[in-house]
Length: 305
Image 1 (spheres, rainbow, N blue to C red):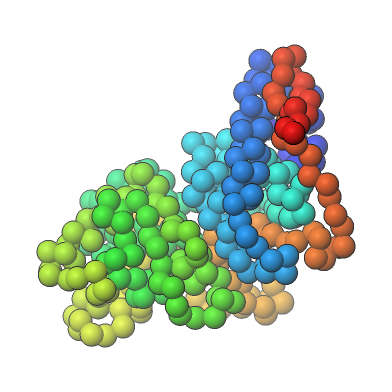
Image 2: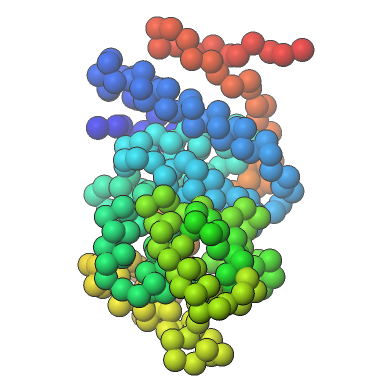
C-alpha cells in the first residue's frame, strides 16, 4: 500500500514504508512521469494569468496521458504525485483533495470508463447511446455540448475527438474540455464504440460537416435532451450512478452552500490547478531533471552548455 503523503514528501515516505524490493519500481515510475510532464509543459505557450487554458491543458494531460490511463489505481497515484511535483517546479500548484473521494481515492482517479464497461456497452444499447455514454464517462459530464460534434470531429478509428472551435464561453469547463487545443484521446478499449457510431452515420449518407449525434425521431431537432436521457438510462443499466447525472437538487445541495457543483474531469477527482507565481508572487527556480542512479539515489543531470 502506498503512503498517503502529499507530493513534496511522497517519495521519501515510499522509501521509508515500502519493501526495499518495491521502492525502485515506484521511484522509476515517479521520475518517468515527472520528466514526461516537464517535456510536455515546455511545449505549452500560456500566459501566467490564463487559468482557464491552464486547467484545460492540465486536464487533458492527466486524463489522456498520465493518471487517467494508468493500468491500476496505485500506478495512477504515483503518476499524480509525480505530475504535481513537476508542475510545482514550474510555478503551478495542482492540489488534490482525496478526503472527498471515499475510502479508496486512488481508484477514483481512473474513472468509470473501464474495459469491462466498454465490453458491456457493446452489447447493451444502440450505437449512439453507447458512444455518448462512453464519451460522457470519459469526460465526466452528462453529454453537455455533444450535439455540436460533427463526423469530422471523430477520428475514423474512434481514437480521438476534436471538439468544435467556436461555441460557449471559455468559462464553461465542459466546453473547454471538449473543444480544447488538443483532441480528447479515447481509451483503446472504448474506441470501437465511437467508430461504430461513426460508421453507422456514414452508412446513413452523412458527410463530414453533419452532426455525429442526431435526434432519433426528428433529424433537425437538437438531440441534447435525448442524449442526456439515453446516457442516464445506459448508466443505470450498467449499475453506474455518476454524480454528474444527478439533477439540480444535488448540484445545488446545501452541503456546498447552494453553490453549483460544476461537473468536470478535474472536479470529479478533487483536483484543482492554480498559478503559484500569480497568486503568491513566488518564483521557484526550476532545476535540471534528476537522473536515476544506483543505490536508490538521485543527483542532478549534467548541465548542457
